[in-house]
Image 1: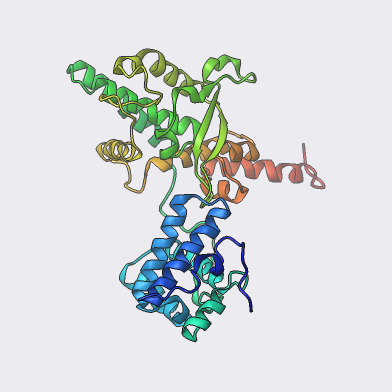
Image 2 (image 1 turned 180 degrees about the horizontal axis):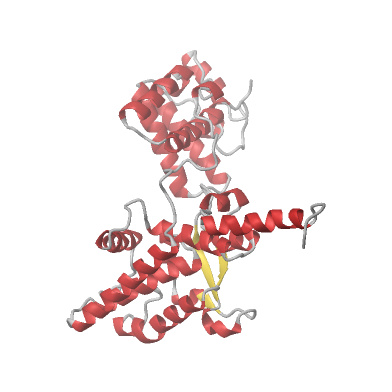
Length: 370
């Protein structure tokens, strides 16, 4: 079979004709990986994703100590067992590794790229599919995270936010330098909850991301939040979304911070919403560290994380009767099933919904007294 020319990543465009390599096997592997990069780039994938996948393939090659045209399904079994029994990786992580390895295997065995022919001509062997249904982890559940993960209850949320506010007052009374940072952090946690944000989305917010919402003029310039760094589909750029402001108290908190507190950091020319005392942008790890410090100080369960505030946003809006589709758009979920995973409604809400569901049936029951 002739190799296909002109196709990004094809063997014919990666292998130099008439050149004798001192280490032909290594040269073939490098040509394969370079071709795979070209093939993925042509599909518009992110460079970081391409780099990550290449590192994974090299790790698998090191594990097998064999070349790709010598790989077989049994080696995937051995690799998976090592990742599970020795490295103790989660099923979702291992499945992600297997998916990337499958993509590389499918690229090599796709006859349009000509690698099978090139390997057979050079070494008398050729790559074969190595990832199958019977040696890879199936995606059986929508949610595979820890079953202990949950939102904060309304009481826990109030306790947490009250403690964050107390840190501002405590620092101010003692005339410590940390008063501004404490005020920033208290407001930041209110924004995470009040707009249902992720850590990275929160850390990368700029002042210019706030805007007016003609449907909620009472919120002024804070009626709409433009999230520019939403969670990306793998290999794609960050997804953007607009989040409508729905909690007046949260709008008041961020307005006060922007107008009265942030200017005191002295970072006038910095675009970030959350700035540090040294004039930089706060990092996601710093958000996590401060949340953990506050959580542990007031004795809340260790299973709670900054992401629990996002879960709380979805749960509390659901309990308050917000439309499911509206919540889905607010948090940037492509599928309703993702939003359902975040929903942990209270027993009071369940009982109220039950009464709404069975009420009409009871009212229409024969002989029902009114």
